[in-house]
Length: 446
Image (cartoon, rainbow, N blue to C red; front, top):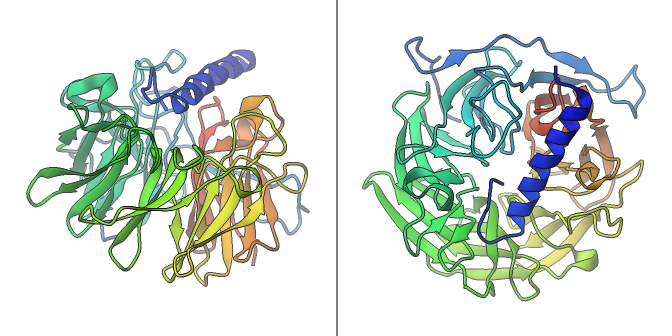
């Protein structure tokens, strides 16, 4: 276990690098199907088994409180990873994900570009954590996976921010077998006019991968398609050089049932504060649906919109970086039939709320409830390490379910949790034994 003061210094440096990359168009450094069990003859290397530690929320009565359980703690040991920025993906009874700082050197604090990240698998109960692929950089690999994965037919697809033929102004789209074998780069980003910095998760539909790059194109990011049958990369949209239709897209594209893909840009648009857009899967009919204006309406949307399957999108805005209590982010909805935007909840901080959601939301199976997480303001000198929250679909009944308290209990959840059989599963970027993040489960009370 590393010294506490050293741990805090490391975390501060990493956060500074991450936030700095978010404000620049070119990054000086970082930001279900059926499956059989993996073969023993694979690249996957089992790590030491971690015994899940139950932790009870401090702000609810112990006798009836739902249980918060740490399923895995990320560490500096070999065959593990550090600081996960992405999301968990559930496939045939197990979770798959990425860490941003996996790999050697294990005995030193994580730095960019030394620790290049990995792809991992872990059982739902936290046992049998396995590293499937450790990124090495270079022309035939990538490094720094910020995003999640797509999995189908025992094949994993993903992307990295850097690496491939163009290094720090590149990134790759890749595939591998479900056991980690046969890793292959499908496309190296970074050619002239191409996008680069693939910080978003590709989605798989009709044997095509759809995704976005944060930079490149006209300097403001791109939307792409990769035809798996033809092994062909196709650029669908370049955001305007002046950012009028948005710039720096984040999160994952979200499909509806009428052939559109929806997404968010972190900045750009009419007010420079981000956009909600849609585009057809063939690249046609690009349309800006909403320009964020700031104030009570929110600004700088982060992560992905969530579609209810009928007519409504839900999402979050992060707000300005910093401790400003008047700008802690929002939860919003957008009605696709009436084309109206509404704020469901404006975060206010304090004992009964939180702030800074940089993950999207998840809907309950009956469509009546919204669940999500917040980042908290600890990174900017505040006192909150994030929370898990719930609200009614109309924005009423907001409740903070669990407050992360930093240290061993975890800190700074980065993305939307998964909702599976009455439990929320997710990751935090920091906290845990060594401060490098955790995988958690939160059991929702009846």
